[in-house]
Each structure stands twice: as structure tokens, then as C-alpha cells.
Length: 299
Image 1 (cartoon, rainbow, N blue to C red):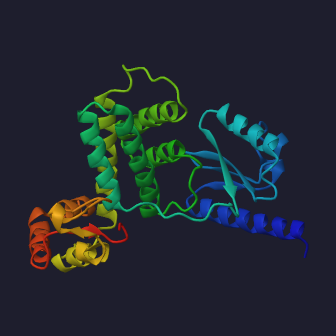
Image 2 (cartoon, rainbow, N blue to C red):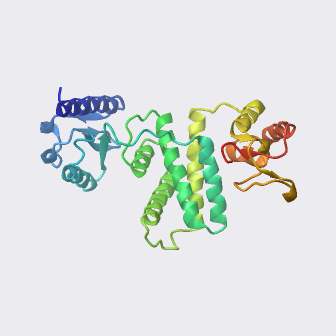
Image 3 (tube, rainbow, N blue to C red):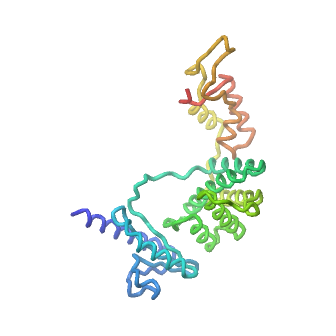
């Protein structure tokens, strides 16, 4: 079997899987070009899926066939020109390796940092941090709701989640505003200060926190113990005696690469949802064996 045939078979298998996935979710799936809506038929996409809340044009490509951008652009323009339609491009073998979405713990940490930055007037940094947390949360929300074939963009996923009752109207509006601001900032455009406000950033943070709570309700996280926190700390931190230079004339260790780190602060940053009493108990146990700590690999 030559390379072209392997690529063709790979794309066909992916199309069949996507069709089954949409059918399981209640969509009417059309793969016969003769049955496509008239405004779509001339471009002959791989499949069309329709439900009362969502209509999608799907095209499957691989590294070898994705270079024909004119056809993809035409399909995207068709979807944009029709109310209630969207375009979904699925790549069967992307060049970039799979990357795991950050954890709920990291999402909450970023949201806390964004809220603090917004309160101090650093609105650009706050918005970008909040948006990274929003994208991660949307992916986790989709996974927790068993949405296997996702729309091609965070805003597309938000629209779908809203139509399915997974996201409130206020959250949808906050995410839509966040997406618009993020695009302007990310592409280096000036942003109207009447739009990039502390209220806009905090609104996005609040909305993402609501989605995080929803994810936890659908799939509660395992409660951490003191042993979990202590084990995590010693997996990531070490006594400076191991690698940090010591200068008696300077009064002790020379922390030229950073540190020392306080166990309480580091635990709180890593486990923002953990009760303070749990963090305090873990910090006390850590302090019983040492008073100064650095990150492993830092020196």
C-alpha cells in the first residue's frame, strides 16, 4: 500500500468514527453529497451533522492533504455565512505531539493570580492568564460531559456548551468578551480601555470558577491527605545542603538561583483548594526535618 492510499484510508476511518460520535449524540449525520444542503453541496465536505441546537460542516485532513487551504477556506466561509452553522477541521495526524490539559489545581492557581493582577491594574497580564485558564477549563468541561468530538475553537465549544445547557448565558457572554480581548492583545493591537477593565477580567475569572465547580460536581477530585502534601513537597524540594554553595563569610547558603522557599506558601500555591488546616499540618511536618528548602534541579 503506497503513502497516498494509507493517507486516504486513515482519513476515511476517522470520518467514520466522527460520524458515529455525532450520531450517538443525537445528530443527523449526512455523508452523501446528494443529500447535503444546497449551499454546501458544491464544496463536498466529508460530512455534515445537524441537531436542533447545532449544525456543523466537518472536513478531515492529514499532514499530506491539509496543504489545500482554498477548499478549507471555502468551507469556513460557507459556515460563517449561515446562521447557526460552524466549520470543524479534524487533523488525523498533527505534527505536534499530544499535550495534556493543565490540572484543576493549576487552573485555580492561574485564576487567583489573574484576580490579584487585575486588582493591581495589570489588566493585560490578568486577561491572558484568565484566558489560558478558561481554555483549559472548557476542554475539561467537554471531557466531563462526554463530548468526544470538539469544535475547532474555544468560542465554538462555548457556543455548543451553552446550547446544551452546560454554560450559563452570563458565562457565555464573559467568555465571548474574553476571547475578543485575548485576540486583540495576542495579535498586538491596541485595546480600548473602556473594554479591557477590571470588571471584564473579574467577570471572566468568576465564570471560569463556576465551570470548575461544575466539573468537580460531575467528577469530584480525590480529597488530599497530609501525607499527599508532604510527599508532593519532598518530590519537588530538597534541603539546600545537597547542592547550594555555603559561604561562612556570607552568613550561610548562597541562593544565587532562587530560594529559600517556605513550605506553607509552596503548598498553598500547589493545592489552592486544600483546607488551610491541612496545609498547616503538612508544613509543620516538613519543618520538623528542615527550615530551608530549594526546588530540585534548581542548583
